[in-house]
Picture 1 (cartoon, rainbow, N blue to C red):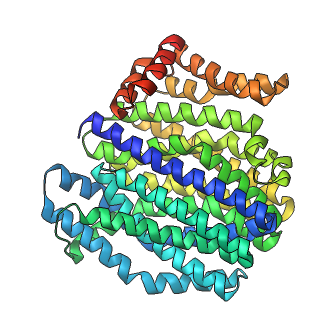
Picture 2 (picture 1 turned 180 degrees about the vertical axis):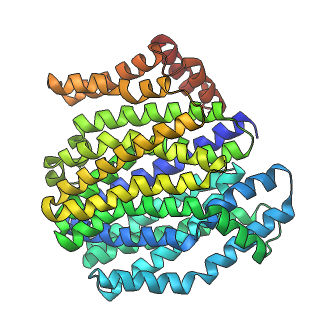
Length: 478
């Protein structure tokens, strides 16, 4: 696969992630305004249970299938591609009853009523099916359907979910919007895969191989979901829904801002499986680290601005977002290097990395939340990110990847926002100054290369009215 096809696929995945994140942010902002912070806390905890269980339900097959599907398409083997598609779809259907019942039981144990628990069970299965299908579409690098599905499902969640909340269904209505969105998302992806032309077939031996291949990243993905969601769930059960909502708002806002960096990281594995080498992976990691550090540093200083549309209470507790943001670039770096390790066949490293990053977070949640509430959750999240960042440094040495340029990409963007915070520069001046000055520092001090950035822009295929000014800015700053 060519670099141009990879960058085009990255562009559509970026659009998909940005759409999903933007719709999610708007959705929760509207829910908070309509029903209050407590409803956001309860609904986000319920959604968190569904999010963890939908990943559990995949058994890692979507990750194992992604690599084999990319290889099969690369050599034109439609028979194997059809067997992968049919086997994953069969497993998704077989896991539906146990997954829904297990999720329902866990939600009931956490104190949710039967209606919300049933909705969470349905959400877990539709989300699991979406992961199966999205992995195959991403492997093909024909990722336009993912962006289209994100748009349609996001609009469905926003319209139906907010209507249900407005009609008085509160947390159940908010969760119902998620169920509808996942159902629409998986339906659009299924229709897209049916247009590929190969014949689905079931192969139990292939399915076993897919499970074994995906197992290490499955463990890491489940741990990642737990590291992101258990804090909210534990706050809901031990402290209260208002603080659960405050921590969830901070974490969600940071995930929205970090969406482009996360998209680049997600493409490392299929790109390497299709023939890219470590040097290209290193470039992606460096650019992703720079993007993550730029947005995290600005969020740490001006995070109240993105929280204010959701709730004044959330904006007053913006320190939670600042704490979470401090560790986000290191967490992204850990995830990126785990993708490299998975592509290189070092599966045990993937598992250990996930255990270290998210195991530390979960232990921190258990230890700190009963004593410190939402502040304890934010600190636990940061501590886990620092642990993951430390492990990633060792991984870079193992693969012989240079440290200096990535270290610059991680640290330089924090300089200008820190100065803005110290001298109390207002947001309308501090944010653009931080963005432009940080990019200039990265280019001038060698962390990024303007020619590499320009080649990515050309590969994405932006029209000249957009790409021309961007190239001019990069040239001027570089």
